[in-house]
Amino acid sequence: MSATAMDTRLSIAAHRDFPGGLLDGAMPNGDSGVLVASGMTDFDGALMAAERDRSEVLLAFTPTIAEVLELLVQSRKTRPEMGIVVAIPGPANGSLGEALMAGAHEIVILPAERTVVAAAVQKAVARVTTAAQTDGAVEARSPLIVVLGPKGGVGKTTVATNLATTLTAGGLRVLLVDLDLQFGDVGLVLGVPPDRTIHDLVTSQGRLDGESLAGFIGRTADGVDVLLAPARPDQAEAVTAERLAEVLDVAARAYDAVVVDTPPAITSATITAIDRAQHLVMVGSLDLPGLKNMKVGLETLDLMGVDRGRIVTVLNRANSKVGLLAHEVKQVLGGTPDVSIPSDRALPRSTNSARPIVAADPRSAPAKALRSLGQRVSRELSKNDGKG
Ligand SMILES: Nc1ncnc2c1ncn2[C@@H]1O[C@H](COP(=O)(O)OP(=O)(O)OP(=O)(O)O)[C@@H](O)[C@H]1O
Ligand SMILES: [Mg+2]
Image (cartoon, rainbow, N blue to C red; front, side):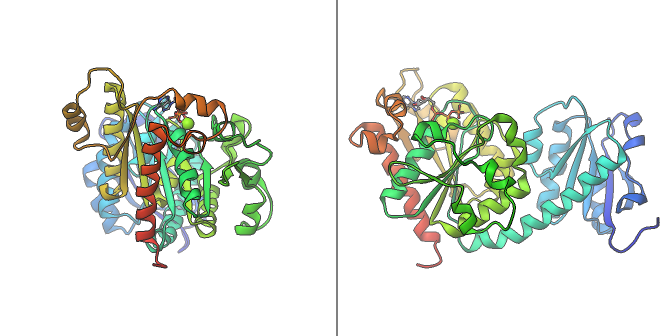
């Protein structure tokens, strides 16, 4: 079969330290809907060659994630319309999440068959296309708020559930989505049984719209709509980035605010949500590893092109007696946190009673801090709402 106009134009680059033996079987040929528009270059020449040959996708063979990060960042800056597939020898060296965060659209673990690589190239094209379509929607009106925190147990779920409850109490129609797809506990924390989950939604047949979405939504005692995480960890896989993107876009049109809780690792689900978010809440805890993780999280968002003005920082357990002074916090974060939540036994108590603390114990100090976060986000939302 010869190349056709429908073929995806591909440029290929390999890092100079990439083990050559792994290239042979993996290189796509003309049979796979892929047209190799430029021959192999090193990373330095990759973007120029892709530009010259009008490539839709760049396939980058790299020995480790660290080596390819700079290329990813440059590519996102200079050719955001181009898909990038990172091919890396397995078991992968370095965090794959980091590569996704920095702009890779697909990752292929080598050795891999050329058909697998070609499929990844086509998927990257699809990703770029859906991202371009949704960009406009995010600009126009974005009720999506993603709660992040690169460390386990820092308080993401506490913040997300209380934020959603505060916004609901303020009169907004709010959906809380649990994107901790494997170990999500929003249902448990808010006392909503997992009768229907996001897994049921994405595996259901038929068109996805506001009405069909409603069939998979639960409701908390305080009136928050929730889309729960799958009941079993193995069901997480069915929630692909493409399906999730559809779900989030439909939710964004159906609700005044969509609050997204995320897992402690950077998954492709988290990245899909970040790509659509107008506001991000970064949660850290008041200890050195907690602060350091928060700083890395903020830097990664920066790499992804997220404007600092859209990020609200939350320091949790802010009165812990661990000897960290205000100026040290400032030094690590490059500023004061926007909201500080004190450490308080009332919090785990409210978790056990299956109600968020803003509802269960509204006068407590953490409830006050969490309400002020809600008010802040609510102000930002009304600023961005095209309706006025
Ligand atoms: N300020 C606080 N004071 C006391 N306990 C807290 C505070 N914040 C959170 N907790 C408790 O810490 C535990 C972990 O919090 P939470 O589930 O919100 O963290 P998470 O970041 O969502 O964790 P994971 O990464 O596992 O999803 C919960 O039992 C919660 O009640
Ligand atoms: Mg959680």
